[in-house]
Length: 375
Ligand SMILES: [Zn+2]
Image (tube, rainbow, N blue to C red; front, top):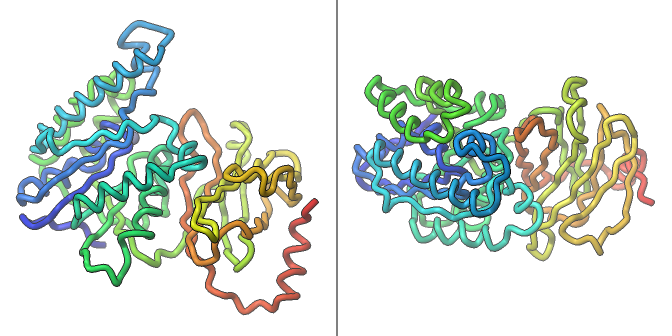
């Protein structure tokens, strides 16, 4: 399993969903990039300002308003800059995008085109040789949503094999133990000195240590792990999604919802991708835990399929989702959202365009008609 090796010609670009992710996931990598004389840029998607429990405890204030959250966000920026200094990275290397904390999934599902253009502009301007980004398998919804946005940007504008730029993209996980990530990842052996500096960087995030001290400090002794993004990564099922099979006109998703997780809020299946005209489209399917009824709503274009209802076997069975609103030549992303507190059970799956399956047309229609009825 390969990991990045930096030289004085390297240009590292790290995307962090929140202030603290640079320290938790990439402290050793940042130290090595600095020692090699590489150029470093760190981009924070959010200020981590929607983080009420530590703020309530530290500020002894129950009700938090927008001003309180802005103040908290500024404090978290200061902590991130202090952590970067410990790692040898100048504060001028940091950029803060100020995207809505805890709401990146909602942004991804509704309207993220301007954010995609912004991210694309940052990459085009910095021209990284190595790009570090969160994994779509991370169980924090902000992490996996930012990962989907960056995959869209990279696949559409940068990781073209015909392009002249030499860039390698790597993903990291901060939350969860997804085998989809860990089974494919390479780990970075850290020296005692590097681990000690990492611990000092994590300690700069005082606000985060207040309620999660043990968990945060434990990151210092855990090796950093990365997965190198490839153009043709195989999709591996994760969480309650037991398998996914993409046909030319439909997607078959087998769900196996564990009884324990059934006690949390009603699960929803998200499908996101590009339409034929290039616009982002997304579909939300509510999956009631104890009913066979599945409602599909196209949140990108309600007038297109408003009121459409599809029926299928929703629980511990197979769903067939029509893909008519999606381009058949683009990747689609699928996630089963089952949150407990603010963590997901699993992240997103990246499903490449269907290889044309040798299934005769009438037979496929028959199979689909058995699984989905449109009313
Ligand atoms: Zn984070």
